[in-house]
Length: 184
Length: 281
Image (cartoon, rainbow over all chains, first blue to last red; front, side, top):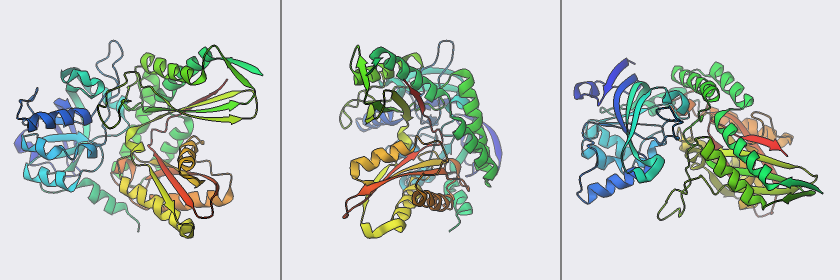
C-alpha cells in the first residue's frame, strides 16, 4: 500500500495509479456538497442548466461544517455518510467528476460508475471534524448559499488525510479489509 | 415543593449542549484507548489514534468533536415535588437549545417538513424531549446530540416470542453488519428489549446514557450484552468500517416486561463520538 502526497484536482496519470488501501495526503482544492446540494445539482443537470461551478476533473467532499468562530477559517469539518449521495453520483461522474471524499461504503452502481468513468472514491476519518479543520486553509461558499451548512464551498486544503476506498480497477478497501478480519 | 426557574433550565441546557459537543466523556476516551491497544488492524489502529487526538483538540479549542452536532435529544427526569416557575418547561429546554447552538458555533441540522421542503429551522430546534416523572424534588437533565449517520441505522424489530435470545442476537448482528462503516464504528449498541414498540426505542436510546461499558444490573441482560458484543466484534467491520477487531465498544441493553404475544427489540446505534452531558438542578 503506497503512501502518496497528491494535489487536487487530481491529474489523470495519478488517478489511474491509485489503488484501494493507499494512504494519501491531499493538498489543493476540493468542493463540498452533501444531500441538499446533490439534489440541486441533479435537478440542474436534468434541466440541462449550467452548474454554478464546473465539476469536470474536480474532487467533491461530502461535508457540511459547523460555523467558523471569528478568526477561524472553518469549524469542524469531517465527512458525512457517502451512501446517501449514491443515487446522484453516477450522473455526476458522467459529467466528469474525478474524485469523491466521504465515509462508508458505496453502492454497486457507484462502484461500477467509478470504473467506467475512471474516477476514485476516497474515505477520511468520520467523527474527526476538529482534527480535519486544521488542514483547511481557505473556505468560501461558491453556490447555493441559502442551503446554509449544506451550501457548496470551495476549500483549499493542505495535507488532508484520506485512504483510497474504491479505485478504477474495482479495488475495494472495505471488502478487502473486512474479509481479512472477519472471524466467522 | 421545590421551585426551579425556567430561565435556569434554559441556561443549563445551553451549557450542556456546548459541553457535550466539545468534550468526550472520560469513559468514552478510555474505551477508545483500550480499543486502540486491542485493535489488530493497522488502519483501524491509526484511525483510533486520530479519534483520540481529535477529542483532545476539540476540548482544547472548544471545537465540536464532529461537524454533526446532532439532533438535540433531551432526557428530563422531573422530581414530582418540583415546581417550574417563570415559564413552561418545554419552552425553556427549546430556548436552551437555541442559545447553546448559537453561542457554541454548533451546526444546526434540523429541517422542518421532513418529506417536502426540508428548510433548516435555523437554530437546531425543536429538541426531542423525553420526560419522566420520578420521586424527589430535583430535575435531572441529560443532553445527547445524536448524529444523523448513526441514527439512520436504527431498527425496530417485533420478534416472535419464540425467537428468544438467539433471535435478538441475530437481529442485532445483522443490523451492525448491514450498517457497516456508516454509523462511524466503534459503536455503542443501545438496545430496548420488551415493553411496546415506542417504549422499546426510548429504552434503547436511554441505554446509551449509561456510563460506557457498565454492564446491565440484570445478570441475564448483562450476559446477553456480552454475547452480542463478541458476535459483533467478530464481523471484522472495525473502526470506521475500514476493517478490524473492534466494531463495537459496548452493548447496553434495557429490559422490561412485555405482552405474551410480543418480543419487541429496538436497536439504536451510537457512533464512537458518544456525546452526552448531564446536570441535576
